[in-house]
Image 1: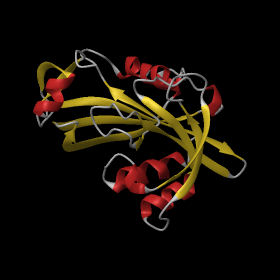
Image 2: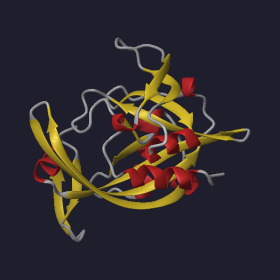
Image 3: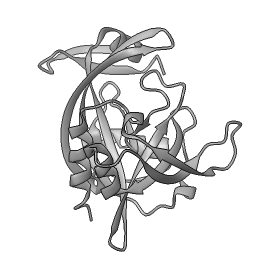
Length: 211
């Protein structure tokens, strides 16, 4: 993963050239990414899916996160970056099928396995209505440890602070590989990738209207 090349930018998003993934995170270069949240409706209820990041990730390991997300590599367009859905989850969808939810600018820093990182990203955010059963997803072992689903309104209440935790059902990769295992967890807001809470609440409100 360290040999991936990203287009990098300054604070005003003026192009600076390219850098490897490790250089980009070590030096805090601005770069681009794509976020896609999977959702589905069942009767009057709307559900949202989110992933559990692998423990080996170089940023925010073992945190819950966007259903599928990834960096744009050097020269890549958004239409090409939709490959992340297929790579991480085994879900195929063209950009035209995704529902635009806006663009966000985020930065965070920390230390993982003794290595400091500065992550500065401008991300295009999308929703996708997906009826694929969780058990039929194809998870990318290097990236995704599991995928879970929760009621949208309960998830919104979690990030708004009126709920302290909520149950979620999903699937997880077994440690030694093999078929996905059914998994039930109780999640809290602080177990998600640290972001402004408004990011999560704004996305969830927007997903209410996805058809």
